[in-house]
Image (tube, rainbow, N blue to C red; front, top):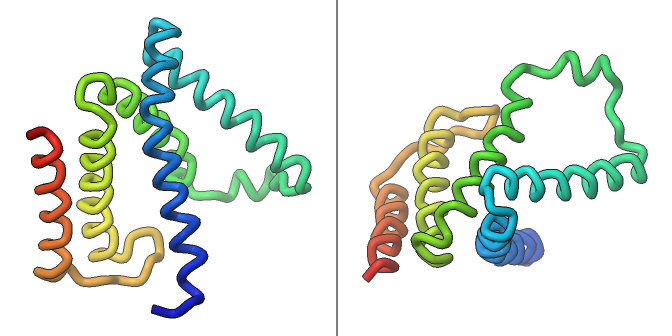
Length: 148
């Protein structure tokens, strides 16, 4: 493996570690707030404030015409993220962090197989193969084992 890949891989691995902590933190927030939807809104609100401040500080605010020209589906990322945050903070107290994270990764891999196969959103087509399916199924096995 080329050294050019090590930094991006390390950054993503660290991001994955942070995602594992996000679940129990948000689950605690949901318990303390008394409402998982309110907890998800608080979580998103904090992220919104930070990202808005960074965007403004960098001078990266897009023009209104650029925003209006974007396809409708690019606006669904926030909706998908809201579902994810809600699902995680709801599921962690019921299943534990390991099972929730491994089930999340399994779901991501199933979707990734399909998205790669059709070249969705402009990504290069990567055909589905038995090896790729086998890798995804190994993760599914990990989900099952995490509950034993």
